[in-house]
Length: 232
Image 1 (cartoon, rainbow, N blue to C red):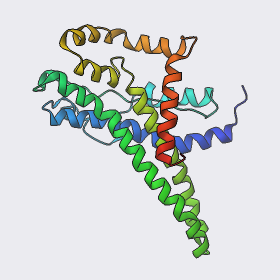
Image 2: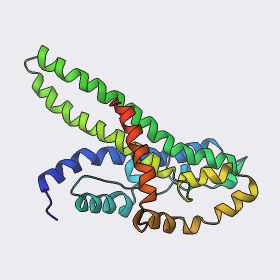
Image 3: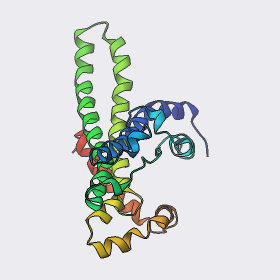
């Protein structure tokens, strides 16, 4: 496979910051909501911070995104951060509160996607005005265009992270939300698949000949991204 190095480096520069912000806010949201519900675990471990260093996972945040960038020639990137530790036994209502804590991660990603989309449209509106009304506006445009590209990618990456994490397989957030809202007997049974959840997920992603999960996920991701970016 031929790799366009210049295009690859451009994609890295555009996508690196958005994905770092996306996963950092995702994990910090889990810790913040858990702390509000009475579990100080994340706070005591220094995870209630927007400092990306506290949330970086060497494989998920650095190695995996780089592998995906090279194997897809920069067309796609994905990664994850260190999960924020949560002790549901500290909650007043463990099942309900854990479901809300789980939902906070995808929730903050959707919020970030919407904010990114709004700022993207503002910049997109301003650039022609700057160039028309200010002869020296090209300097500002040179700065704003890369920012607009990063915001555009931020919408997609945050939607991707939110939708992916809402897959109802524990230990993903969607699985933990489902465990929290199912009747007790079903919840207890379903939660037992968590130790095998990542193997099930990898099987669905890479071994399913019908690509069932991708066929469900990508239309949702595309629809939400298009709505936020105002394409439809």
